[in-house]
Image 1 (cartoon, helix red, strand yellow):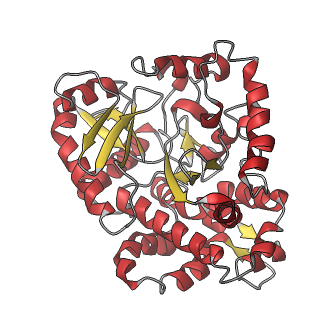
Image 2: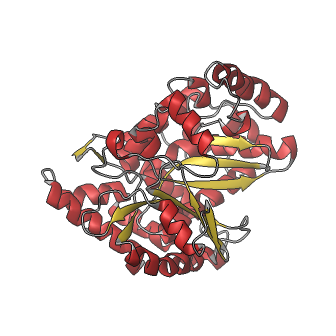
Length: 398
């Protein structure tokens, strides 16, 4: 999970992640700091911190309390520097052109290369906060099943996770604005993102040939020094990480507090698992859904989140929904109704999803709180409340 460092009073971004990490590390310049099961890390921009599990987690149940403890333990340093952590996927008024400062320490040459090629002083680079979820596979057979399932779930994620309706102080007309900026952030070498929805490829050799070889070719003319590694350049909405045997999701906006992020990850994992087990459709059926259909659904969900309507009957059938059309919110209602029964031990983790299903995505709740017309002070008030959610460990309810 990625969070913005902002001034406690003004909520403007503060590019001092290196200072904060140094204090945690006893004065040493570091790019990450382990706090038991949770690690704080730097990101491309100096105003962003990443919060992640130190090791791969094989159980969801302990995660909310571990994240809560890590955030609580960080508060004395935040107070000392007059900082707050600001959640949501995009800062509502940051001007990245003049406010972005790239990480200048370890691996800075990689960030400088990105900046030279893509111009990182843009919203799609320095003003995007997401949740990365990695699900494991071993070998081509497991990869084929997992990749097919992930492709089906990916377009529906903004209907749970959208939290970025405002950019440059105004509504963008999209509830998940981050996805639009993410889609366009690699224009200098578009093979890095492809169509965001990954190609229907189901073995490593084909993936390397059809995904990584074009990336290698496209980036070579920009990266003369050879600083960038091809395996780390893939920027699709879900990335096959053969180096560590996982598929990494990149389509989830950060929520107002980690318990909500964990709940969404639990939901996604449970639904993916049910698809891998072919509970609602066969592998062949899942693999037959065209990328065009999935990309269209992602576009709609990025615009309207839970209100987006999916009307491709084959896609719906692959999810076990036999209707001519269904809103993305209702799709999740049906999917979660099935998977919640599969593991009663984690039932409590689903509580934040009840807020989303009853009151809407965080983006919808932000819009409802602001109303049709708002000014900078209204924005400050609402986003100050969102920052409070990280402290009080409560969902945002207008």
